[in-house]
Length: 208
Image (cartoon, rainbow, N blue to C red):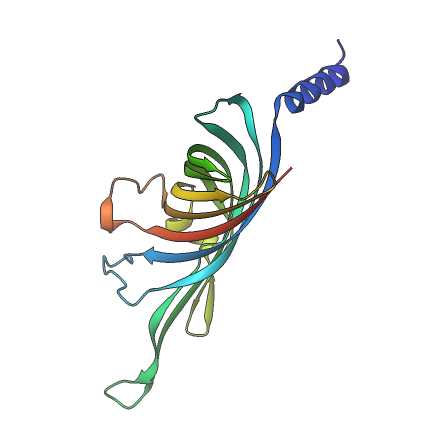
């Protein structure tokens, strides 16, 4: 069998087993737990908003009445702000102390959904893991802008663990709320001494 025919056979077989496709859009509100290089925790960090986009397929490998499985790709923004703004120090000079992080992560996800109610509308508990890497990121300190791709805190693979609830109002529309925790794989297990993120997410899923 030629390579072209093999690829065509694989694609046809792959998509013939998938039961449904979906597009999910959401809004993230992220809090950073961050300790700088001097081991000083930045206590003035505040949550900031970002967007989330996912595309995937459900029940590709298995489907039961008790559980549904989804895989796909994600693009997410985990942003934060902080600092005390602009003020005057003891010498009468202006001192600026403000921070802003804007990031875009790309990754793949693997999720499970367990229905807990199915009367007219369907309610389910969702959990999953997203493995991602920083695609683009900028940190603004006062009026200076730095590339986060050069920051050790943002290098490597990040793991995002998710748990939440979803409400499916019909076969095509589903609303969800999730709490997510993200950390670089090299930082997992280091507690508060490492950089990590907590995100509240609301989402809308369109299923085909």
